[in-house]
Image (cartoon, rainbow, N blue to C red; front, side, top):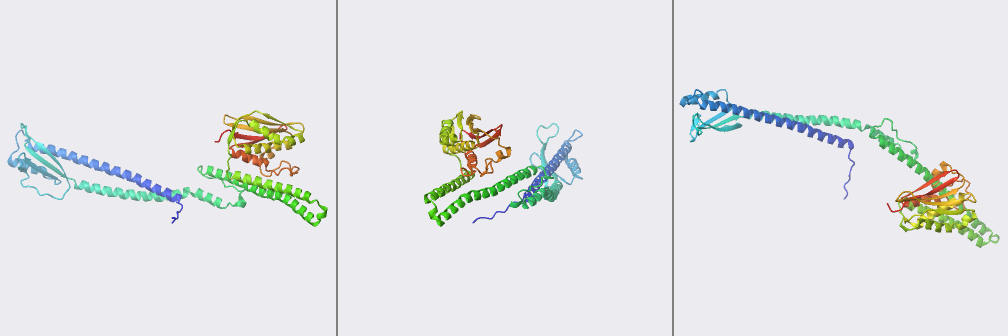
Length: 446
């Protein structure tokens, strides 16, 4: 059985932590005050006992140079206790006989702090009296109790006051978050062009708002691309399907006017085109879901390029072009995928290069771990707007679709997907009639 979990309130969490911290801080201060007061009282009690000890020593050793004897000694000690009701005094001789008070004192229920010491008279080397001096500290203990109670109440009340104030401060401090949540709540799929208002936001939320707006921009772009992709797919599939339907309908209505072998051959060509579009879309879907390249060691990239060039030899010759390869390197790549990407790049260059020029494949190291493979051709300079979209699906630089029967606008999109599957990226630049489109790939798995 799963236990339902509820989101914890940030306001409640901050308020509770502030309350705990306030209680801990106030409690620590109150504890220090209590301990310092108790220490001061204990020190004062000890000092008073020391002072009284000095007086008792003086009384038990005749201050006039003789000994205090009999009634005079008892009288002097009795006088000492006059006005000192909070003191208890017991004097015994060294043999244990009670000297003062006359009768054995009865225990009472008061808090006493006692001090025991020996007294020897002038000229004696051994103690003559054993004295127990006790001081009633009940008043101090009561004072400490009241102080502790007062400090505890002060700590609790202070914590409550700080907590209520902290709750209000946290509530006010989180108001920008609530406003931001209301802005986010107003967004929907048909309002992706809108952005969160970053004006007046706290410095802590400004980066979050900026990143969220960037995310909205990417989502808006992806949504628009998806809409365009759906339209392009519909267009690309509609054309061969319409051709198949028309040819089949005409062949069935007037079978004597058509060569069935020719009709089937034409239909087969359109079916191959449909199959190619579907296979390419499936490949792009797998790449988008995170498929990675299966790398093996390739000792020569130039050798891979030459094998791909052999496949394009006829189309290069028909276009009056020559293919050249410069540079070479070794590395770990998925050769079937790499050959497909190079074939797309060479096919694109063949399509747009000027007659009588050369298609150059340049293999050059970018760093010790990366390599660049660029296919360059001479022709019309490609505008910046076209270069920014050249790797989009179903995008064609020419709107006339004059090459629509040969390709369906997924070649360079597949090339970009293959670069991502290798952990690399695509590059494109065009200037002074030279267009360079290529791959920037790591030599080893990252």
